Amino acid sequence: MDKVYEAALLLDFYGQLLTKRQFEILDLYLNNDYSLGEIAEHLNISRQGVYDNIKRGRAMLDRMEEKLGLVHKFLQQKNRALEILKDIKSIDISSMSVEDAKILKRVEERIEEIVES
Amino acid sequence: MDKVYEAALLLDFYGQLLTKRQFEILDLYLNNDYSLGEIAEHLNISRQGVYDNIKRGRAMLDRMEEKLGLVHKFLQQKNRALEILKDIKSIDISSMSVEDAKILKRVEERIEEIVES
Figure 1 (cartoon, rainbow over the protein chains, first blue to last red):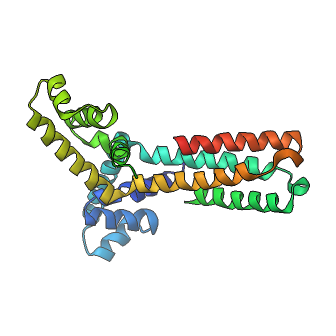
Figure 2: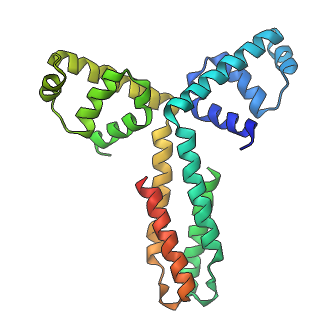
Figure 3: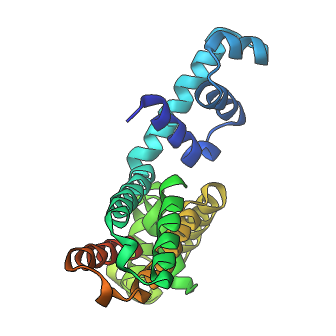
């Protein structure tokens, strides 16, 4: 998996356990693509301070995932939903009743919601 | 939702953040249906000690869910899967090809996996 995407997921899941400052900095870094220098300037702190917060914050997020594994659990559900979606899309709806075809379309949309959530 | 089921879910999600003793006691209490007296006897500690551990452990689990809301997030996915399952089961497979009917059966089983996970 993409390293930044993975870290952003960890922040999304466990970010509320960080200090406000750590969260703020990691959010700028991971979700808004700020460089360390830009974050330092934006928050008016030293580059070293930014670096330390990222390092400690990341360590905390990794520790949480190591203990709880909830990002992994959630990604498993998503992967299951993706597999299901592929199956659903492979079904030929032309022989189904209009009503059943509608239901299957709705099922497809709902599974997409799980995949994208 | 059933209070014991809810607490057992919280323990399943966040239990690794408790002390070993808290986890052990809550596991006996919630998942093995031991009474406080039985736990006290089983672990050779006072009833008050059991009570304190349950109280502190539960407070920690509730605090985690308040901060992270991951049990709620997970239950939302399950509810979505349940709704999808109902739709799938309502589809008339008699007019489908054998191949498509098989796929739909597999889809149903996989969604059941999500519901039961």
